[in-house]
Image 1 (cartoon, rainbow, N blue to C red):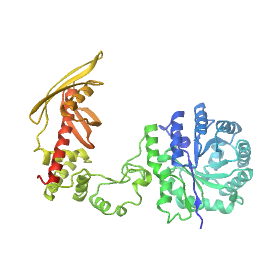
Image 2 (image 1 turned 135 degrees about the horizontal axis):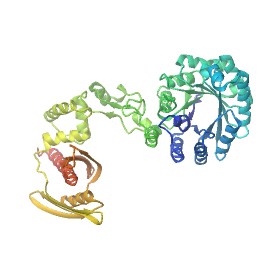
Image 3 (image 1 turned 90 degrees about the vertical axis):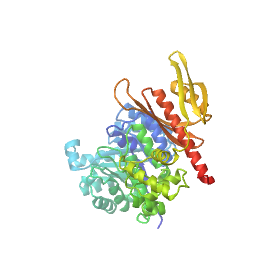
Image 4 (image 1 turned 120 degrees about the vertical axis):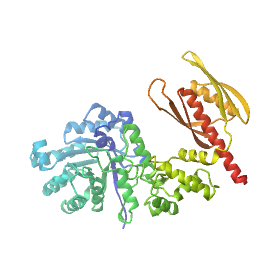
Length: 516
């Protein structure tokens, strides 16, 4: 059997953006649309052109920018809306107008105040009018799942005759169960005589947490387009998540034997993170596919299984969705095997079993006190338990000259290998100049990868703590310094990182050469 393509209709920029807290500027929509193009979605619904001047401009800008995807605008079944959509989409290489009207009794009676006959007439008229702007017209029967079936079949038949190439079946309020929704799609296929002339699409909301399940059930029963959003954002509880629908089809190709998508799945994680940055939102850690914990393992049994053979606890590879690799999270549930593996990944491959046992006991004690043990915590354990015997470089003195009309300069004196060394440097600020002077004295240049500062107490004379992560010759180490003077704390933290680097380097070199 030849496989059929599932058209991925992404409505992140329209339905997703309508959700409270997810609004985007025109520039942000264009940035997001470029990434959706890299993701290789088939259709980008760029907005609702008639809703506001900003939405009109966003649709127009996306239409001018995107070349490889169909660009779509939503429009009510009104000529004024459709004209706006057509105008905004004028420059698109591939364009679609998506027009809709509600078809459920409750919507027709209370919202539209129209009879079924009037709704049918309006729908047909809208599709015909939209055809003046593009041959690619999609019609949505809003609240289709709660519509009377005979009327739904009738209106779909009429709009297909009027020229609609796609008919969309929304579960607008997220009310359907998967089996029911799949059966609705099967019924549409059986009861709309001209359905072979149109693509059946679905648009599922997540009010009961079933948007993805309903979309997949619909696909199993003959739908060939799915409306989705990145991270599942959208009105109320959101829409079907693109990443979940796409990866379900890919991972369970044994179940979805006759369908496929053309999504570049390696761009999924990057697209998810871009949306988070643009909107200031985040996904919950346990979110499928793109959550921080989606490929993370803390339980000892799971970690042992993953390290032995990935497929014991993972049904897809992290790399397939653009996540660099599975993540072994070290915490109180982790076992010795995972701990030893992390030590080896950090470069400590020559530790004795006795040393590992000693470190593992300390690790467990630390893990009981904090939720997650990071690499810098392990470095600290190693330093305390194994490295401390190596001589440290000591800070003897530092002097800073800085001000709003002076070029920041610093002088630092250290004790290294029994010798006092003094060095001076300028910089962009007092901390930068101090660290540059320290590097001159040490005879090495590091790359500062992270710098954080926090107050350990209250008041103007509060004790400050600085934590740094520094890359010395390709080896990243962490350091910590405290003082009421934040510049001093910074110098101490940087020097602490250097001492840890030297201790680690010396320990490994001696261990490899058999010196210990």
